[in-house]
Amino acid sequence: MNNPPLRLAAMASGTGTNLGAILDNIKKGLLNCEMRLVLSNNSNAGALHIARAYGIVAIHLSKEQFPGQNEFDDRLLQLLQEYQVEMIVLAGYLKKLSSKVVRAYKHKILNIHPALLPSFGGKGMYGHRVHQAVLDYGCKVSGVTVHLIDDEYDSGPPIMQRCVPVQFDDTADTLAARILQEEHKIYSDVIQLFAERRVEIHGRKVIIK
Ligand code: GRF
Image (tube, rainbow, N blue to C red):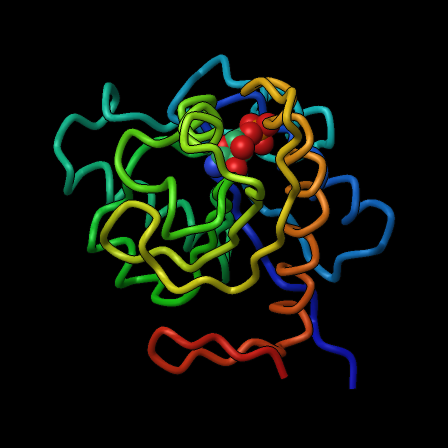
């Protein structure tokens, strides 16, 4: 029996190339998902523009509009409920979600990190800082981690990881670009596994059936 399309929301702060790759794969019929809603804390985020170009509801939601954590969470949860969202995909979302939201969507919030966690992750490790730290350490491989969200930065159980080689003449820019190409593939691969209801979570162990 075919599964009904998985109803997603995405949250992003920046350019939104990962979001664009997911939307492209949905459009091509490669992902059995519907993107119901895209949210950004940044009113001018590329991600909002990309979403609108695909005809998807794209909303600016930030702490400036809802300074209290409770008010912000209530509005976020209200929107997610209104659009009947089953899973949330963080795609370059730089804000931490509260425990209330994490609890409400337990095991249903994904994040992508451009390194092999638990190395080179945690608070403040985003963008080029990650890649520069990998180069400064002299690593021979880096990669991508897609993981579940918990209450800390980059600490939830990994769902899938892939290696990307570091080349001797890499800069943070060239390494970031090579890793981003892999990000655009792995995120859709993981989302499709959820759409096929093939992901089982046992504590920190995530099993693909
Ligand atoms: C990606 O590198 C992702 O791993 C990280 O934030 C970046 C977002 O890039 N969490 P983009 O906005 O999808 O291009």
